[in-house]
Image (cartoon, rainbow, N blue to C red):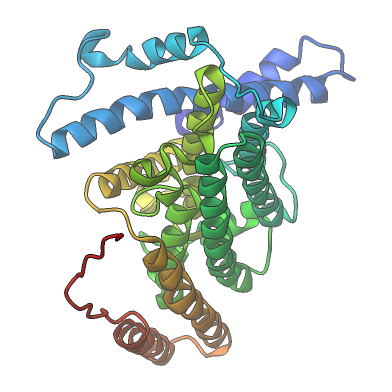
Length: 396
């Protein structure tokens, strides 16, 4: 039997390792052991990436703000996450006297578990998916919606006005932007004809010459991706949509009354949510684990997936160091007056693309509709309001 090419071996190295580790067990236990190994890999890899990302984010923001990032703990400051973890584990866990202790304890656990469940259906490489279900996209969004419950649990159980206001802000924001997030993904389902994330990647893993058939390279795909990216930024409470954690108004928002390791779990859940939603965006619009050029298909598929995922994370960091925080009214107006109508229109454009004959005509028609709508809604629905001079009134 001929040996597999080295590129294939590297591409499937984790699958081969899993099968090698499980073959020592009885046949009846091998499927269960394989699932356990895959779960352990997910639970280890993404928190490890979270630790590295915190260093990269601090250093990146420091560079943008002309200051130094972490540089004291370990070489170049890369042991800073270890110090932070030790600090979180050793800090006192303070629970308010009037808080609902059980719900207060469960809230961060629900958040982290729900986010980890979303990774189960993400294809992180060829044949590298924990659960390949036909409704994988639906499962992912169902798990994502569970995070809203955990945020409400945290705010309500704390018995703190800042916490409950932060929770209400977060839920209003997440529900508002969850609608365009879902609808922007529906366009991909319309074209791919499947809710399976594995099949969506396979549909994009095709090439014309050396160029890929990624959905982002179509008019409807680019529009969907931009709306998806905006909604995903709001869903993860990242700048400029980080109003639920507005320290100038709400101290720390819904986790004001959290300390120690429970606070660290919220921190972990936020970053895992960024990894998760970035992986979904790469899967839906950027070909998932497929190579950007056919001549690069020899590179292991999992490298492409994690490269796209980390590229999205660095965009999140870039936005945080660049954009100011929106006001609450600006955030809600943007969701309901621009993002949602544009996403609904893009569904119609996607249907036109699907049923029109291939050629330059559908490119022109779809691009013209989207460009015209962008200009029209930008000038009418999101026009700048002119406020008069500020007046001050004092209590008599």
